[in-house]
Every structure is written in C-alpha cells, then in structure tokens.
Length: 147
Image (tube, rainbow, N blue to C red; front, top):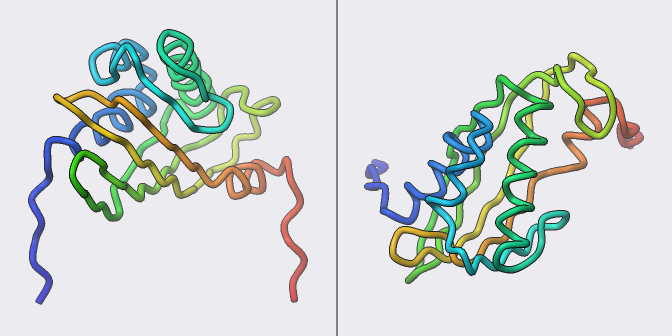
C-alpha cells in the first residue's frame, strides 16, 4: 500500500514557480520565490544574483509566450536537508514563437528541477527540461531513427 506524502514548504516553492510562474507567465513570482543572490545553473539561464533573476524572468516570459496554455503536473519529488528534487510533466500547445515560429503542435515534456531552498526562497537551482522532446515535438529536430 502506497502512503501519501505530505508536501513540504520547499516543494511548495517549486510548485509555485512552475504553476504561478512558467504556466502563467507571471515574472514577478521570481522576486517572491528566489533569493536576490540566486545561483542559477540551468543551461541558457545560468548566472548569479541580478543576472540570474533577469534570465529566469526572461525564461518565464519566453516559455509562456510560446505555450500560453502550459500546465505542469508534479510526478515525483524527494527532499534532503535544504535540497528538493522534482520531476514534473509539462503539456501545452505551441501557439507563440519558441525556437522559431509557432507550430500549433501539442508538446509534452519532462523537466527535472533541483533547488536549494532556504527560508522559503530558492537560493540555488538546477533545471533540466527535456529539450530534445520539446524540439522534436515542435518539428524543429528530426525524430530518432527506428532501430
């Protein structure tokens, strides 16, 4: 029998970043949920402090413009001390520019987020969205050859 786990404060921070930030395009959530000294490791968004904050806000805007109906489901999570790991599934329709003009394609992808959360704010983050899946489903990258 599987026991239900209770969401932690750190998990809720990451959930809010996905649901209230990336899914809605609300860039102001970054100021609430991220430390001003944020260390961001995600490819394309990496930086520290104000540079990282600005890049994450830009990333939220870019993703929301490309997929205004984007929604996330948390598939699994784990926590150890001040670090939380989340596996989330994203789904949306590409109706705005994203690595090229809109395609109208439905996209499903996995993202792994790892964050160090202190006092209710993300102080360090590693994000790993499945860019290959996104690009293939947008038709911007060929599908792998069948074996």
